[in-house]
Amino acid sequence: VDDRTYAKLVGARVRSELNDLKRDAQSAAHELGVDPNLVARAIDGDLPLAELYSVLDELERVYPIDASDLRLIRDDCAAGVRIMRASMSLASSRVFSRNDRSGARTPYYEYRDTAMSRTGPIKPEWIRPLRHVEDADPNNPDVQYNNGHFMHQLTFFIGPVNFYWEIEGERHCAVMNTGDSNYIAPFFPHSFASRDASQGALILAVTFGGEARRAQKEMYVLQDRVKEYLIDVDESRRGTTQLIRQHMRNACLSEGALRAVLGDSADLVLDEGSEKDLTLLQRVAHALGVGLADLLLPESCAPVVIRRYTPENGTLYPDPQCAQYRILPLAQTPRMPYMKGFALEVLGATPDLEDPLVSGLHSWVYNYGDTPVSFSWRPGGKALNSILAPGDSACIQPHVPHAFGIERAAIGKLCSIRVAGAMTAPTAIELSSFANITRVMKETRPWFT
Ligand SMILES: [Fe+2]
Image 1: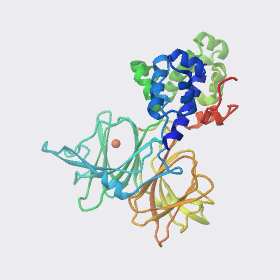
Image 2 (image 1 turned 135 degrees about the vertical axis):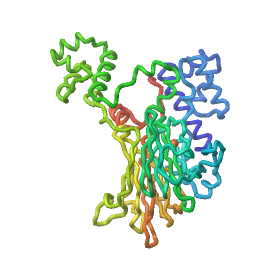
Image 3 (image 1 turned 180 degrees about the horizontal axis):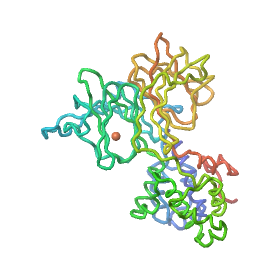
Image 4 (image 1 turned 90 degrees about the vertical axis):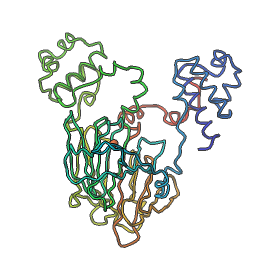
């Protein structure tokens, strides 16, 4: 996005914020102590960026707003796609050392960037484990666990790599091979090591932030009070009662008031050991003025999930009679419904944009095979094409129809990961009740004229 287009968007965003504050250019300029023309030009996107940013700083100084919220994301994709070539990935190579069994710091991982866009949540790394092991002992002193990290991680394995992880002080090891995958919840320590120095063992460590990442700024303010939001997601009876109590506090609904509505059933609701069936939860939802879905927890699951490569379980897409792809789902968890990973095997010769791959999620693909894959996408009317050579990767924005093909008599091998940005079902449901959608994307009007 060029500076002028970006300034226009930020101007629209300033207008939106001033609408929220019930200020127009005139009244805001008066309170900021600046020329009204300056604020008007900021709103119209007619200021050079440096001047525009100083207006944002002034707005933050005078009003209770977050100026960083006014600095929009500069779209770094071209027509919805950003490609990173294997040569660019190689140029980003850096090696980090960790202690070995003797205490010496020796090379542990080589990291390389792959396609990444500031418009999406995915931070994918190509990682070559440089520490080699001869066993599957989770306490092998050559294996150095990390401290865990804030990002969720979906890992795709290429070659003989051991995966190590730690839960409540207990260490585990799984022997992984090409096509296997795992999911690791935030801050669980983990590590990887190669089992064969002669083979090209790799992992694609696709990390990403979810709703908690988007709430990070607020949590930096709330500090210890963040703990008040926690619920027992491993024990659904207890967790459901905790969730209902949070809604009760929000609604100023006392236990007595709940009893008045539900009678003796209120005891089941408030007892952390009791099962609450859907009929009861529907009555509770009604009493709280919320939806049934607001009271439901995902089923309990482990913080680390492993999935083995099982080609016989793949599904042919779009249909078995004319299969363009074989889709092999990677590790998944009901706690992360908007995280989808696939080993995507490309079978058809020509990318088929008549039956494209498309979703509301941000996508990332990496060619881990040894054959180039044709890549087409159609952000609007016109189709664009490129070739993803081995080691090339691409980010694809939501709702950009795309397709792959393989020219040679071979199977194209892509690792494909999809993750939601902020556009999840709650956002979609809220947005769908608005009287105007175009003004959400770019505010063009004051709140009254
Ligand atoms: Fe990690």
